[in-house]
Image (cartoon, rainbow, N blue to C red):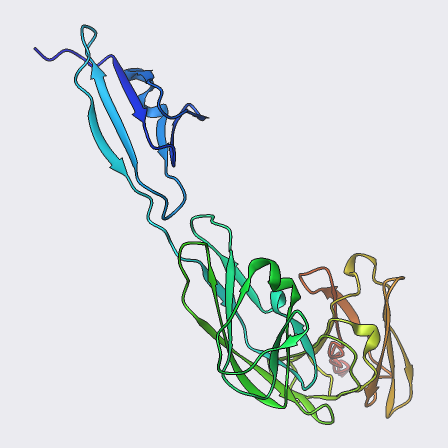
Length: 309
């Protein structure tokens, strides 16, 4: 006789994960009875990756009697965290917060507990809590120490590595380059970005029309900028786009000063070249700061006068 199932009973002995009924987490070591009509509302949430297995039980009722309990285990496999990094171009001597160089994520939602750092060259150096670290040595830090860790660019290119740990396993190493150019002749290649984190008197030159000069502390830049044209942009990262005022320029046909302010932070940038006819425009840099470009002048075509017979 094939009687319809009218009820199910569930049991969880481990307590690492838990049953959920209609959105409500259920306690361990308690029988959970659910009508067959509500079975679709029952789910099981695994515990943290790498935690011990849960032993679960289930049985069914046909309206007359219960079946025997059947047991099975639920084991959460840990997924190691991943890190995302990007190459950086700057000038030698600039210092970057380690937290600005890496983004760590964990598919299980586990908190990052540790980071490991590596510097393959000796141009620049990692610094943890005020102590310079040697090259070609694994540098393990806690997640709390990340805010105390910096990297200072040297002259040339260093290949750096970083990975993260979720308390159970290390993720894969990811490499990226930090290139420190000479402050006296820093260049921005087409589609490239040159980032300056602090005080700098660098002489910067755009080599194309699609580069970006990113100034994290724009008021402290006392250098010069040459070759800005087309879609070249200066990213005033610490000047609020929400409050930015119209940029102003004063100068002559060979040089001048571009001034950008949000009423709180004011940056004055020495531009080399003729910008007297420029109409500098602003837009958001996507992170709260302000991008300034000097768009090409609109070309107006002259229409030929009609010929009269």
